[in-house]
Image (cartoon, rainbow, N blue to C red; front, side, top):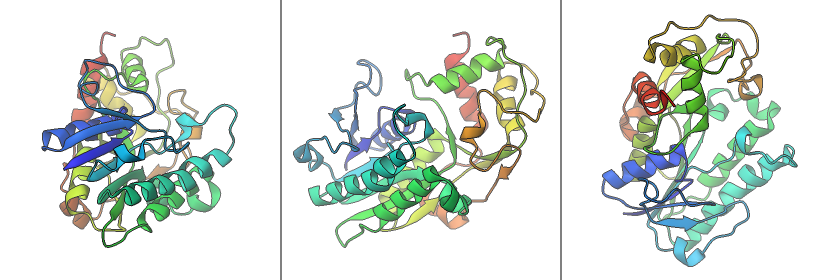
Length: 299
């Protein structure tokens, strides 16, 4: 299967691209900027796509049988001169519009990697512009299903992992924090949520391409963890004890990133039928943390 991975230059898309290649897909990655040459991602064919601006080669898009979309925008991507209207432009309108172009180009199967918030905590759809945009992008994508086009969303919680020779600044910083190298107070906020590794999510994406149903929205996840347990895995991986819980905003996990509120939990269990259908590994978070720390420790 000739598969295009949009957002394949990043952590989630890069992990999906490399996993699909291992499974025998002819993988092309896409984004606004090519990855570093000579790296595992840099060795894959690259296609420049800016889906928000609808700037891409439609003939090149038509060369693929399937597509994985990992380029949805979140709070890290908002330009300084934009407001909440950015979410509508980039997610609510931009993502379904691009999937429509993929359908019209003849792509047969397509996975949108979305966010867990609309399904795990639906009340946020009415109060949070970002979460609303994720719900609208999901609805817009799945509504495009036809007899010849099988789109679906696979909606993930907090994702962590590593991609060979790809630097993810957040996880480099987490590792240095656990090592005590940042000169910051060591603590964690109360609360917790669901986490999934890039490996588990990549396997779920592959399962969706192979067996997912047209118009479906699959809520995936792996482990419910307190933030103390989550950050504690990084500390334990470098031989240190878990940091204490303190009721205040954490500089590496700010309140702006916790839509369900600091001190609260957003836990859920994935439907066993979804896990069986998509066929992805569970209990993979600790391994992923150890892999991250191995990549960045001493840096």
